[in-house]
Amino acid sequence: MTGGSAAFEPHDHSRCAGDILAHAERASAEAGVRLTPVRRRTLEILVEAHRALGAYEVLERLAQEGFGNKPPVAYRALDFLVEQGFAHRIRRLNAFTACMHPGVAHAPAFLICRSCSIVAEAPAEPVRAALEDAAARLGFAIERSNVEAVGLCPTCRGAA
Image 1 (spheres, rainbow, N blue to C red):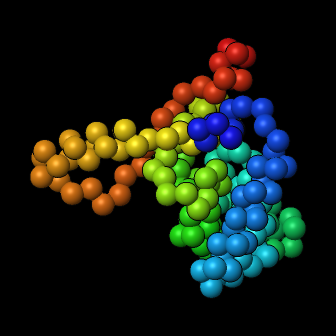
Image 2: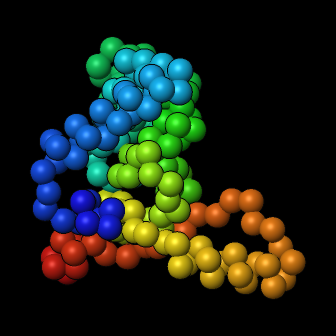
């Protein structure tokens, strides 16, 4: 995956998904937390999509597969995945996407296609550094920030 943009590029999706799921299993075991069947399936759903999915979209898929149809089923699984660094919350869309670089300390910017909702992670260290610098000059201490950009992915740009 080049720069986290696999969502926008042709790639071996089964390898991509397999690597992410294998990492989640290893990291969960090392952290002493359980990657339960519903948590694992939720991550699989996010990985399959390569786009941001709302909690109710995830819940619908889980319910179809017999995991329950109450909102806490999806929200608890999604919260776990975000807490463990296996998924990211896309605040602009109130949705979630699988982390394309699990286990690697990173501060991504999310590039969101306004047409098809595919989300790619892009390295955002320079953007974050500029934001920290601007905040520091104002005496502001940033506790959390999300960098999200909306536009058109290469496929949707080509179709326009």
